[in-house]
Length: 89
Image 1 (tube, rainbow, N blue to C red):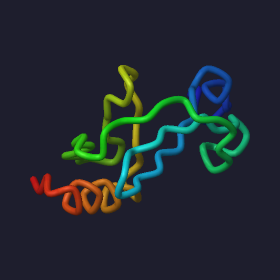
Image 2: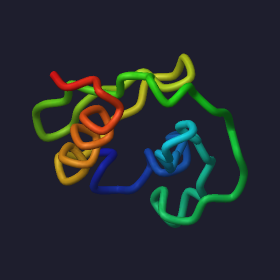
Image 3: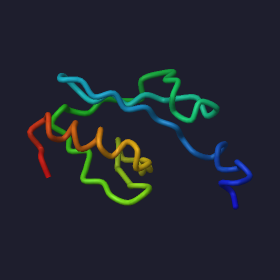
Image 4: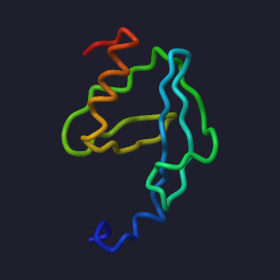
């Protein structure tokens, strides 16, 4: 019900994750963009950090000690980032 009413939008933290060959950058995004407009750097993780494996419609990831949910449309990108880091499942 909260999904329909949009009440969770004000409670959730929205993050954008940028994976480069050097590091994984976690950025804070505005709530109204749903994660699409990064505002500031929250933290970095070593490039060799495994992000997956992921499955289901909404996968749960632990990023910088916080639990986050990732929609299925991004699962391929997570798998590709792990593969490119030599962390194939």
